[in-house]
Length: 131
Image (cartoon, rainbow, N blue to C red; front, top):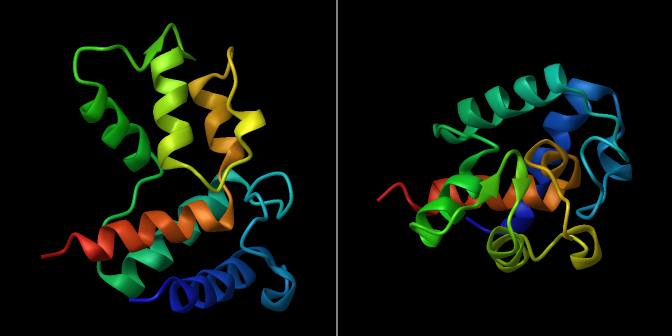
């Protein structure tokens, strides 16, 4: 499935959950800061996408892949992402401004960096790995 088609569906679902007009949503918009998505909206958005694509979606998918990739190297210590973890995030989340991925970034703050593109990538990854 093409990313453009996923993007269109994500925009419709965001509009239904938040009231933000789908035509005003851009791929680079951050979910929380720019679109005003809250945690309840995010649960609703993920549920709707799971139903549409018949997949299980978790925002933590990226973290899980990074942890597996790092192996014995710690991803975070006391909630603060390690240098190796930051490097892996930069590699996997190319849609995020690299200047935002810096020393001191916490696991809790990372989700604030998620954009519409990040969400589309998670959906695309899950659909691509159904085989």
